[in-house]
Length: 283
Image 1: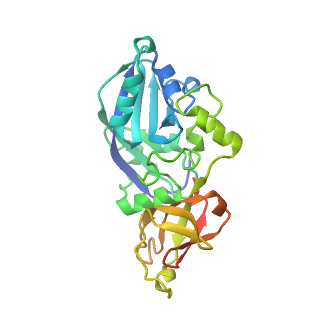
Image 2: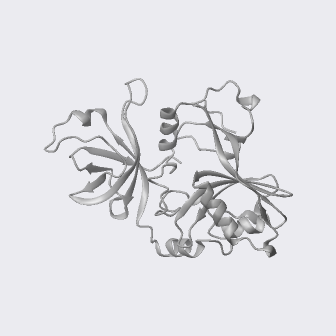
Image 3: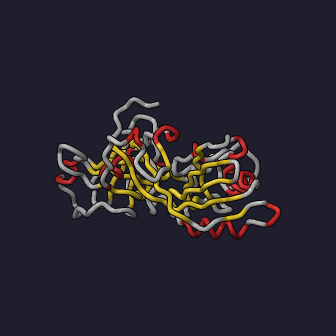
């Protein structure tokens, strides 16, 4: 268990699906990316729900028990997940799907570069866990700083139905060794042929960059802005956290999807001439 002082507590509610029946484990094994069959009862499992072509539609947390499983939709369209599951459930699957409900979830936020350690830092509960009662809930800026520092693709500009888990740094949310599952064929091809065309990177814009002279007027940073390398398109910004005061988050930071040919670059250029520095996400 980590001994690093946490930043605070992420306290939020998420939509949750309940699967009932002794076929729940096998059903989730075929519909999500995690190796559910190897998970023990009561296990906490992170997984992705993909399209048939391997694009990420939702990030899930699963809790398995003797009567079925709970599926918390951490990121993505929960109604689409419910509809997608319902569409492929057949009587032979021995699974019943209950209506969506809300589940309160707590996560102790450990600052980067310390490992995330999901198992010890996430609890589903109706009230603040007693052992975390001394932690304060983080505000939106502090949460975004934690998320971006760890490279977690929770923004709709990252998880947009056009990206796959390998591009988003979600390799520990998938199994490449288990049997057939939705989207598995595409992921197998990508890994065997080194076919990932872009990868998620953290970026930083130094405070002094905003005052440097440029031939183009400076524009506010926003998702969707192009990144350039030697005049060629090299990627796109997906998340932005503007710089705060000098005592906290003094420089603007964010995430970007960087094209494969530019992954070796330590910096890229914005269209207005400013430079951003890049590094691999700590997560």
